[in-house]
Length: 282
Image 1 (cartoon, one colour):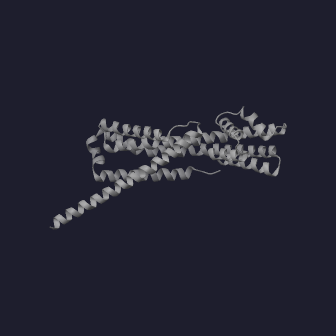
Image 2 (tube, rainbow, N blue to C red):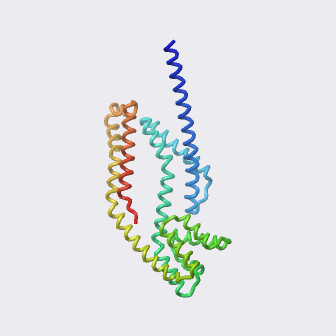
Image 3 (cartoon, rainbow, N blue to C red):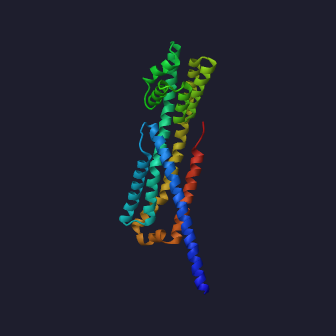
């Protein structure tokens, strides 16, 4: 009787745990899907690409499943297949975030020359909007795209300050925010906008030089962090190729899974600490 009660209690606890796990998994799946669709649509819109978010999620999911099944069909351990699928599921979102960050950085790099050209146009007697139209035609991408969209929104009836706010929301950097604030203040107070833009251009150029020096000084630390993080993975794959029978204990036993989990946690903590060390605000 006691054994029967124990078996029933164990089965009930297992069922409840499985149900809770499935419920949590479904909740996290829905949350990640919504986040993926939102960030992907807005990120691609910054590159002037307008695609269906549902189709993007479907393509990403199919590719992740296919890339997860392929290592398993080739005889690799299940944990490797799951890891490949997880990376394939997360990689497009991270890649898009990196591309957006790189695009914003390019806009910041083009701002000093643009501000000097706009200040020269203002000193020559042009108005702000006519100066923007004239200078944007000679700017390079991606700054020319953002300025063209700003002018197009204004022609469609959007207020100039609202168009500037939209520009700052698309390129949410401190440099763009400083330029937008300066143009707004000059429009309200009637100060010398050309002189203000020249000072901002000098400030941004100095800031870019400092950022370049900081990236050069911290590049070695970032490279060492990536090398040290990839060494355990490369070593595990090499040992698996040399002695698959011994290394199979790492993929197929509870202790092996615990070791892999500990390694993943330590890798994540190490990368986080390195990023905190090398990230210097200017």
